[in-house]
Every structure is written in structure tokens, then in C-alpha cells.
Length: 428
Image (cartoon, rainbow, N blue to C red; front, top):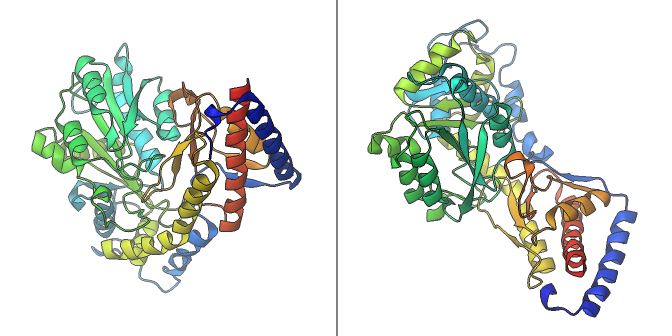
């Protein structure tokens, strides 16, 4: 296939007319397809339906230590729930605090505590003239929404194939005391599907930081979300806690995870893991906010998922449902765009997204065209702080929610829109 950049104007005009005809046929179908967010499909949610009846009217509602889960108490989570979430967080139960249903809420609260109170004796961030944050891009829009809500200045740093550009991360952290943290989705990153290399993890743990209260927000949201199992070296992730202990920076990280895409989004269990000093401080601050989270939900999850082996078996069922969708996306992009110069994309081995880079200056137009044709994508620019992609190139593809046949159609529409936007720009 001839690259669009190499075509004559006459060839491009002919191609544009063909693409406009194809696009008009899609619009005439009256499609209503949504790929805007990484939601589990109905088939995935059905996998956890048995959990809803696991605490029936005759069930024992006592925890392993005898706690009556119907009543107040247990600020940091049931012992068996801490064990379960420790398996997801790659940590020890004593370093885990089990929270409510949302890891995003846990991350917001962690920023809020540092903002209002400081951390481990450092000044509250709200008292400082400036607070800045390192944001690997493309990245997770809701992370950026948290720091933006606090007025924290966000500094984009490009992602590579093994994690963020560590030369730039190290330069920023070492040179500016107002740089207080970094967002990390270290395994099957959102949206690129990158798993951080051991070297990147060690450099994050050991790098010089001008701010003594610099914090790594380690959102390991996709730790168990393998598409093919952890069969390759690139699927394994070095534990940030161990790396920080080895580097003598054991208080530098907060680790977050939840079962939102394991069981039920909005009705899962979230947790944070941290150093003993950080755990003690979090519990002290939490005690003014909360008496205890939903212990019945914790108990329900423990009895359904049981342990690390139970989580792995459950997630294999998820993978069987969504793997064909990711493979369909890869096939459609390859068949429709290979050789045209109209884009590049990731082929992740886990997680929930595919990162697509359209020709510079065309992502917004392609997404708008798709929406007009009835296919809603994540907004162009969403993967950058403030929603502003300076190249107007990146689009996050979320293939999990639609049934396979709808995804097939949606990808045909998207490919057509990408090509049409590219041709328009070349002719413009």
C-alpha cells in the first residue's frame, strides 16, 4: 500500500472521495456504539454474579478473628481481606489498609492528606508557594484530574517501551523542591500497555529528590489483568516497595489497587500498601474520617476469590472474554492502516487499552468524525494533562465493553475516520 504522504494531490483527492462515500455509508446505519471508557462487558460482570449470593440469610457473617462484620469497627480491614489484597499489591498484609470500593478515591485522599497535613513531618503542601507533579504521557486522565483539582502544576514526561523517560524524571525530581510526586501505572499502563522494566523501578526508588516528601503514586490497577498470562519477561514487574527498601527510601511510595475490574466496578474493594511509618500515619488521619469500611463486602470478596490462586483463575476467565477483542483491534488496525503512514499503535499483553497515535494534528478530527458516525471514543487529548495533547495525535482505544460484533463495526468506522482525517490534512 502506498503511503499517503507519497501520493499526488490527484490521488489524494480520489482517495478522499472514496473515503467520504464509505463514511457516508457508516453514517446512514445510525450506529450507537460506545468505546469511550474501559468498562468490563456484561459477560465479564456475569463472572462475579455468584458472589452476590455468597452471604445468604444463613451465612456466617463473622470474620476469621471473630469480628461481626455487620457492625462498626476494623478501620484498616478484615485480616483475611488484608491477605487477599496483599496478594494483588505484592506486599505483606500488615502493610495493607483495605478501604472502600475505589482506588481513585484512595489516591485522591492520599493527595488530600499531603495537601492538608503534610506527610511524616513535612509541611502541608497547601502552605507551599508551588506544587508540581510528574505525569508520564500518554497517561490516565483521572489521575490528571486529581492533581488538577488541587491546583498542582502537571509536567508531562514521555513514556517509552519500558516506562517513563527516567533521565527527564530524575532531572525534574532532583532539580526542583516543588516537584512532589509522580503518577505511575506500572503494569500494562493506561493506555500504552507498558510494564515498567526493573531498571526503571530501581531508578524511581533510588533517584535523588530535592523534596524529602516526594511520593510515587503506584497505581497497579492492572496487576492481575493479563491477556496471555505472565509467560514473558516483559510481563513481570519489580516490586516498588522492595526497590525502595533496598535504596533506603522506604517511605517514598504509596501502592494502590482494587477489584473494580475483577468483580464489580463501584462495588469492589480497594486498598493501599505503604511503609510501616506511612501506614501508621494514614490510619491516624483516617480515624477522624471513618470508623470502618464495608466489611460485608470485604467478606464477600474473600469468600468468592479466596486467595491469589483464586484471583488468577478468575482473571483467566476475564482474559478469555476480552482477548479476542484486543486481537480484533490489532487485526483491524493492521488490515486498514498498515503501510499508509496513518498511525501507529500498541499491542498490549494485558490491561484494558490500546494506545493509538494518529498523524500529527488529526486525532481530534478523527474522533469527531467517529462520533458523527455513531461511534463514541475517548476524547482526543484525554491522555495528557489538562486534556491538551500538543501533537493532537493520541487516541485511547477501549475495546472491552462492546460485544465482538459491535467492536468489529466500530473499528471499521474508526479506521475510516483516521484515514479521512489524514487525507483532509494532507490536502489542507
